[in-house]
Length: 340
Ligand code: FE
Image (cartoon, rainbow, N blue to C red; front, side, top):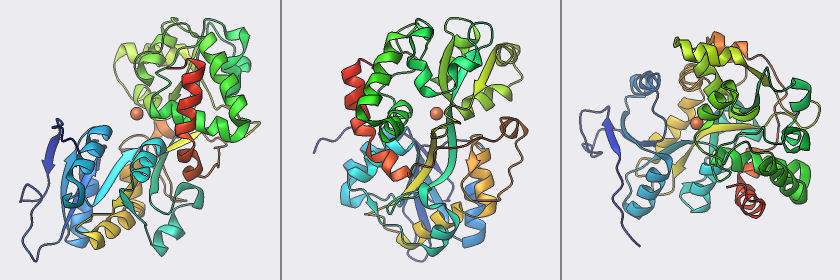
């Protein structure tokens, strides 16, 4: 095994750092790719209600995964938190997760949003964003429309290799078949206004500026722009329209923030308690609001006017585990289609 030093930020909420505790002290070692201000309250509340201290290691998703792999059996990691089913699937396919056995989680988290080894705690949707001057909303009502010849030279996208697009590709495979997904990817590539570059926010800005007519973006990037006080962001929001894709067919593709308990977790009880805590009403609010996402637990009320302003939609109810499993195939199909 090769060891690689990865740049990582170590943030410790507990008095003791690194993650070594006195024998009688209960701790939870959390490896998280989330780093939102409101997440602070999330951890403090957990410690308050359980007495379990949280040692938090923050880093980029891929770096954390690499680190857990390198630490092997000696890893102090108890729980791994990240975004996107594709990334959780990578952790799971590496055999890093232990099964999550919890009646409470079974009851509170909808069945399509959990697998036997990892659980979703918030959702986000991948929507179509168009320039109001350049594109008619009727022409971009579904993901499939983005592949239509009518939109030649109009589509901007982040890389096809990014987990967000691989997960979308996976959903398309499930609903339209492998051949359908490849045809779609080829059509989208043929419609590109430019070679894929940047993140979702860069695509939204490019659409707002008229550099392209249409793109796809995760909802929280839109809400972030809607909540911004910067004049250029306000102007960008004015210039764009948002479509919930596939409302007449299989629904808008959703993805998740989620977590799993590591197989090598030294504090398995604390890990399960933390997972169950994430499904509590209060934690759901923090977890979802922190990144402008929706809670997974029914009837949890968020207080996020811009998020609520997006309105209601029909989400794709494809089981998140199935979505995750097909991301590797999506990568192959995108490669063949030249969606890189
Ligand atoms: Fe993101």
